[in-house]
Amino acid sequence: MSEPQGARGRRGRGYTLITPENQYVSRLPSLPGARFVKLVTPRLAPARFGQYLIDGAPTGSRLTLDSANEHFVYGLRGAGTAGGFALSEEGYAYLPAGAGAELILEADSRALLISRPYEPWPGLEPPTAHGGHARALPETATVAAGVLRRELIDPLDPAFDFNMSLLRFEPDVGLHQIEIHDEEHGLYMTAGGGTYGLDGERHEVHAGDFIYMAPYCPQWFGSGAQGGEYLLYKDVYRTGF
Image (tube, rainbow, N blue to C red; front, side):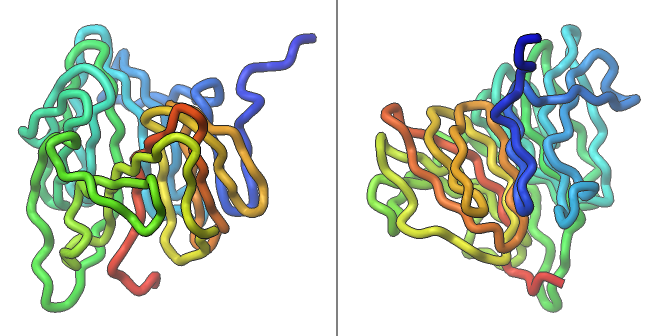
């Protein structure tokens, strides 16, 4: 018998690697005909957010987002809107809790959706909705040579309880340290590939792969000959309780 598809997928002690071949298509009553993949949800303890990959139906799809949660939407293919913000390829939108916004995908469009309960902080007003296009944002250097980032949510605004960053790695470069920290991650490879170190193990990764990293999972990335890029979620500015 031949080996089944998805051999690169892994479930480690502090992480999960899901490749396109591992994706399992779920269903929602409000998304008939769409391809809905749950990349991570709070069922995978200790995850405290959900991240979903949505392919719109051949006739388009419309999803009313849960007003109890805040949301971030990132366009991967095609076009649509999220809370009224344009969602072309690499377009994005942050939508606060209570907005009751809609995600509309045109035929055969693809988007990432992140949802989580908002954690308020005394004396801080909740953030407001905003959107834009990733390539219109400035690209800034990091402490690791050859690693550049774009911030899709203002990392200096403590009203936000999570950040979204687009990190680009030039060919054959890597992070300057193995990181071990409280922040959990949802990471989607948008381009290129390389090697991801996770909890002492090393895994080949490519565009379309997704990694969930639990708090305190040792982590490191080094790009391959073509470089690499990923969209990174992390929770910030809160105590962890």
